Length: 355
Ligand SMILES: NC(=O)c1ccc[n+]([C@@H]2O[C@H](COP(=O)([O-])OP(=O)(O)OC[C@H]3O[C@@H](n4cnc5c(N)ncnc54)[C@H](O)[C@@H]3O)[C@@H](O)[C@H]2O)c1
Image (cartoon, rainbow, N blue to C red):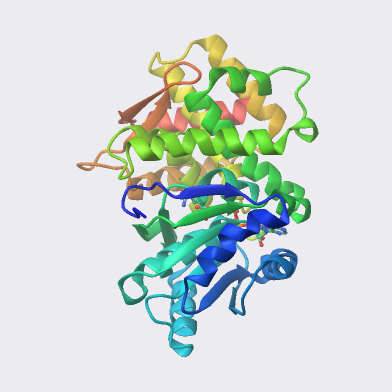
């Protein structure tokens, strides 16, 4: 198995016999550890029990982005150490993107690396974060500041987990589906943009498969993000800055996908400004995102602080920010440097569109 180029094997767990492969992986391990958060331990680990053929150590961690910290990784390392885990143990991450990112990072560092599997439980984790090997934790208020490229050996997608996912979380995950379509599949995006489209009519199996296929192809082409993989950052430069800025704000916290939805509107405006999409395309994208996501205006007094966080973006190079923008719907253009006044203009455009 090659762990170095992001080619994780992705399987869908539908029937009891689909779990045979997971169990075969489990049998190879000296011990099995399951990492879950306080919600997924109850809703998801319990429902897996009848299908999993082993005894395991359950490691639980606190819920949500504010807990995606070094403390989380240290907790995993402490539990592995307590149970004398050797390098042949298997860590299975049963959770959303937060648990997947923590577990993948912790697995990559423990004794210089142990095998791990992603068992994503949120839509976002199924369509995006469990694929591609980016792992890490937030640090000093900066998103994903400490981390590793470290691919799981396998990703097992079990769609019934979505039944207990809160609707707001489902919608947040859908933002990454929309992003995949915007950068790589015009036809699929235009279907979302039709007036008759409704989230409740979505065929989840088809959507998750399509999104994973888009992301996997990009990651296989450019695992270490020198070019094509930057396309996945569309909406994420301003989106991450917004998510980070409101991370400590209990009243106004954005879920990851909600912040990315705002970022996609603002960065579509930038794409229009640079002549990469037409006014008509900007309008189609904006109306579609406005229809799908319950977006709220951002206080203009927060703009400066949000924009200052772009200086910490991991894509920056030689002191310059590097935005990924759209080049028409279904295509992208990377490495755009954007001046502060334009970022202000893009956020102002977002506010004007959603009132
Ligand atoms: N590594 C990557 O490539 C990548 C890509 C995109 C996003 N991310 C990261 O992913 C994170 C966001 O992931 P997320 O949206 O899954 O957040 P999350 O992990 O916090 O999960 C969302 C919420 O849903 C709950 N939950 C998850 N599955 C459930 C289920 N089946 N039933 C009931 N409750 C459930 C969780 O307990 C949590 O409260 C962010 O930290 C983001 O940076 C990483």
